[in-house]
Structures are given as structure tokens and as C-alpha cells.
Image 1 (cartoon, rainbow, N blue to C red):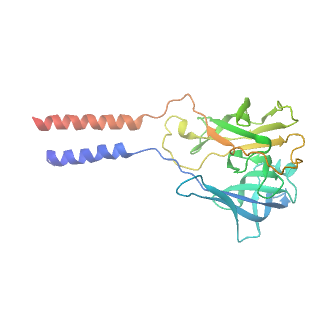
Image 2: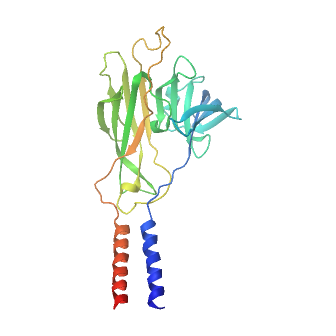
Image 3: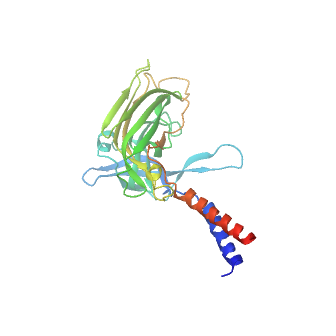
Length: 286
């Protein structure tokens, strides 16, 4: 191989290294709304009747337009995230449910709804991952949930979560924050309207991408299980103005950074390749 051919191949390798960027895979989440029609505790399932699927359209300008559309199916059944679902939900309850990869099968989030009408509903209870529920919480509350990975326990692209940082927001302002270990709970009732928020972190996952040597891995997103209960303000839903509270954005779930360093193999490889390229160029000029 002459020097010119070798140089061309080396330049191609350098370009390839520079073009490589980390990527992460995400399984589609399917959110549905309907009513609970069956609770089968022995089989660990919950069935939703007359489901409608959540979806958004994205116009060229302006915000996305999101709504629920009818499905060609009368009922969907899935396993529940926690047995606590059987203490919270009953037949006939309006509910939003989310599953991974398709409609039904395994519910990763279940939320009980309350409101004056079908398009003015808010969440009072959640079993599962609050970040998968597109409906805002009742009483102008919101949650910001951050899980921290145990980098020694990562069977794939997700790690077991060591803890969860839970921020309770009221009217968009953080009013309470605690870090919960699995099976720990918090309660916030600092407003003078008899409302309250209770959160239990049952168990969780966190992305492994913040752990050393795992940058750029692809795979399903991390999913956690919480139990959430919101008691609305006194007199909520009894006003005569028919004005619903201003909804806040859905719960935000993120993964906290850890102190372990990220892998630096890609930058080192690029620097090495550039060094070899410079050496070859110098040799060619001689």
C-alpha cells in the first residue's frame, strides 16, 4: 500500500470517529383514558373499558395539539405496577393508564381522575411512574422526581435506583423537597387550604448512561414505581364559576448525575488518530 492510499484510509477512520455520537433507545409509551371495568387481584391485572388513546399533532407554528382519540377495541387489560392499585382503584373509576411498546399488557402508570367534565380532569392518585401520565395533578400541584443510579447494579441500560429526590411544587414553585430511599414516604400539607400531597417511592430505575463506561449505550428507558395521593383544597369543584384550575405541566422525571466519571475512550481515540495523521503528513512532506 503506498503512502497516498494509507493516508486516505486514515482520514476516513478519523472522520468516522468524529461522527460517532452517543445514542439512547426509547420504547414508545402508549397513554390511554377510560374507566376501570375489572380488577383481578389474583392475576395482578386491571382492565380499562372504552379506552381512548392519547396523541399529539405538531403544527408548523405554535404549541402541539394533544387529545384522546377512540380506539377500535372495547377493553384493554394489563398487569399493575403495584398491588396498592387494588386499594386505590375501584370499578367505574375514570383512569389514565400508560404501557410500554403497545396498548395494554403491562401498565407502568395508573392515575385516578377527578373533575367536572371529561376535558376538565385532574389526577388525584397515581400508582406507577408519574412521569408517564400526561394529565396534570389536582390543586395546582406538580412533582419533579429525580432518581440516582446504583452503578454497581446495572443489568442493562438501566440501573437499580439508590434513591429518589422528590420536589413538590405548588403553583410552579418548589415548596418541599426530600430524598427518599425505596419504600420511604413524604407528606406535604403546608398550604392553608386543607390540601396535601403524599408520595411513596416504592422502587425505581435510573439510566446507566451516567455511570462510567456506559456512555452511548442504547436500550429501554428507566421506569420507577411511586404511590401518589393528592387531597384537593377544601371546596374544590364546588365553585359556581365553572372555571377549572390552571393546569401545570405533567410530572418531570429525570436521572441525577453521579460522581463516577464518564468514559473518555472516544475522545482519546480521536486524539490518537489525529496524532497519527499529523505524523503521516509530516513524513509525507519529507
